[in-house]
Picture 1 (tube, rainbow, N blue to C red):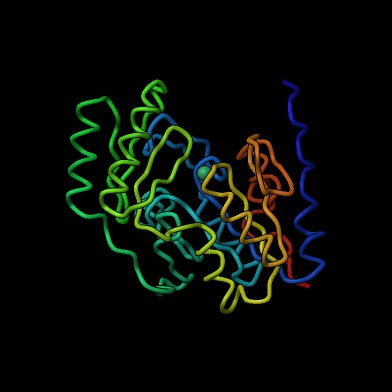
Picture 2: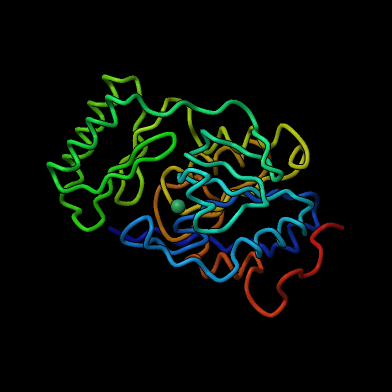
Length: 260
Ligand SMILES: [Mg+2]
């Protein structure tokens, strides 16, 4: 089978910002940091939280992290966040000042968590319990995937939950949590309202974010290579994302303003 051609790299951030107000929505794992063997194994670039805060300042606050991780978990790796953020696949949303945007999703039913815990222990998955969900990880043992997917889908049906698939991870969440929902919620109000959204992400769950950005007049940027995708542009890896965002190099902490 022929390889699908790469998408073009996006125009520069400065060029895009010159066309009008721009809003950035950034996934975390696989986008701002390289994926590691375990969720806690990631190597976070030095002062990444400060660098994101500085970039948000250049965009008048129109930058949000949108991750599958819970917000407290993001803060464990980045320090106290001073940018807008959505965690747990969009189920929890906070403005840059820490105030809640919309209602907070409930945690999973205890019976579902117990079922996942027993299954994980019996079959060799690593279980990650989150604030608004729970995930089975199998990066070290890819052959476990079909069994894990079947179990998660059955469990989701019996508890009215939803399965989210990612790279070597199967997660159960409450219905309705999505990165698209987070993008739409932020775009409803200042400072995001009226801006052109750009969503950057690497995984299947980011496709919702790409679609929501496109429906609001923006676009998605896929990190790495995966098909099919609703993204319009592509960057190779987290290092290329940092480069495109201007997060690295000698111009930290400010850089020039992206606002005309
Ligand atoms: Mg990701």
